[in-house]
Length: 136
Length: 278
Image (cartoon, rainbow over all chains, first blue to last red; front, top):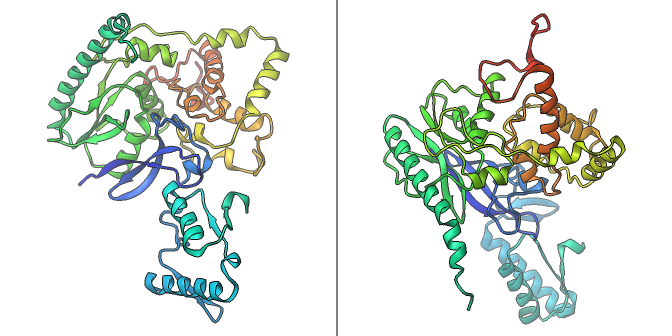
């Protein structure tokens, strides 16, 4: 049974947002085609876009949260990981106040995700410290 | 409110009607043939553009289009490599078929089991591509229109040697080294690419040091480039790569009488055994 399709998507690497097709063969992403009709990239890609599937099946790719215990990273559930983040944030907030906490947003996220992050920072935690990975 | 430009609509109407008629012709060809094959690779309208799609027997063909152009050879090759036993058809325009012809000569694709449905490009497509041969040898849908000369060649050739060096140095200095020209080229298939080898191209340098990166690729395109223009259309730096390769191929034609993609039985001059003489 042959299965070939192209899935239109956005390059995950930076905030430019170039359009590309993922070539999917028998359910597996095997290649990238530039999307010629895309208003931003007009059929062009940089080296990152051309290679953006290289991490998809990479053995080093994180597929679940890890928690460091006694210096060792151990696999954890999402609930456990999120509980840990909330617990630690609360701990710092209680001990040192909101100014002790900063947030880093990312070009790899959508605008909506970045909006939510600054909302979390300003409204929930109450800190003005928000920066972007491009300035790290 | 913007007024409707009736004059303009009248002017482009024959073109629109022609494309629709040609597309109907090609739908019929594809529908007729699809029953005998495992699938046909053709362009499908998608998000305001077109992209290669594998139509299977029984599929709805109403979204099959011929333009805008998208190259087919690489996707066909991907499918043939993955499904070697399949019987496939492919809708090809002139540049697609020429690309496949040159791939056959270098044992990159086997067309024995592939059914080609040739379509001619419209005048508008040919003009925007500056294509000298905007049709395949056997046209099954559409009508062949006359080719268009690439007027850039004359401009570049009228420059003095110093002007040319300055022009191409400036062009190559814009290179982002995205490798898009190589990635999208149907004739670039080496598993080990000289452009990724530190011996030929210093790694980690932007722009790639003049002139090795671009001239290696240019030399590899001699008697091989079929003028599909995918390299320069994919180039984020806008380097007129196809014009460079066209100039080289004009020399190859003058010296060896060879034109890439013309005939599957013509041997490329650079793969002739040494004892064979032309």
